[in-house]
Length: 141
Image (cartoon, rainbow, N blue to C red; front, side):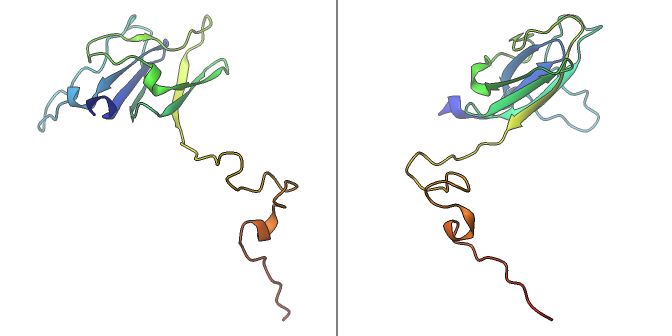
């Protein structure tokens, strides 16, 4: 199951991204200079926007300075070595840049017919009784 190991997601402000294995980032002793995580196409204008550990089934949300938000699966971004530049993960308008990359929390949504209230007016009625919770009780002083 080597393909399911966590990987480091690297995204630059100019829209390039890749995943690298965690093993590529070796430990350094005190006073070490660190390791290079990626190459930049234009070092004068490009910066690191994201460096996060992800799994193949994680979803990420990329937001740009022009307000565009894109959700995609982390496993869809190719895995490359530390010294590679990566691929274009988001095409950008002139003058815009990637300003944030977030991991979308994994939500376990129940399948149809597996329960859930289907909203406050749904077939299960919603409300406190449908959730097996007790309603708050007012106490007179």
